[in-house]
Length: 97
Image 1 (cartoon, helix red, strand yellow):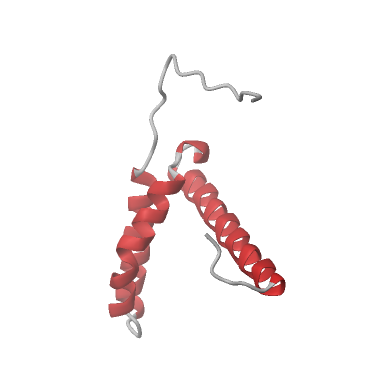
Image 2 (tube, rainbow, N blue to C red):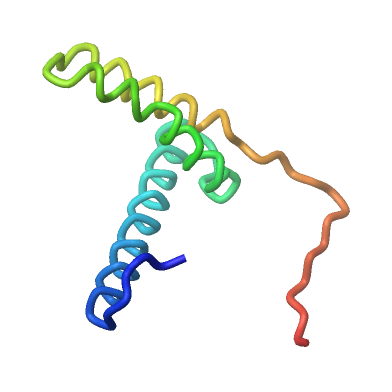
């Protein structure tokens, strides 16, 4: 759902959504490589939920670099825990309607 009305602002809003999406996918790729997990198996929705849950934690550690580093490490660990296991027998081909 877009919040803006003018065409110029709609373009900017869509661009921001694309930047956030690509940034999160890049983060998931880096986390997958550093934790030895297939990045394609990390849950995008799970990563969004973890980030939203930890937002308040980051607000309280502003100006405390050591606490912030611990929160970042905790965030990375929690994102890599949102690993989707292989579901054998699942086949979801794209369909043409």
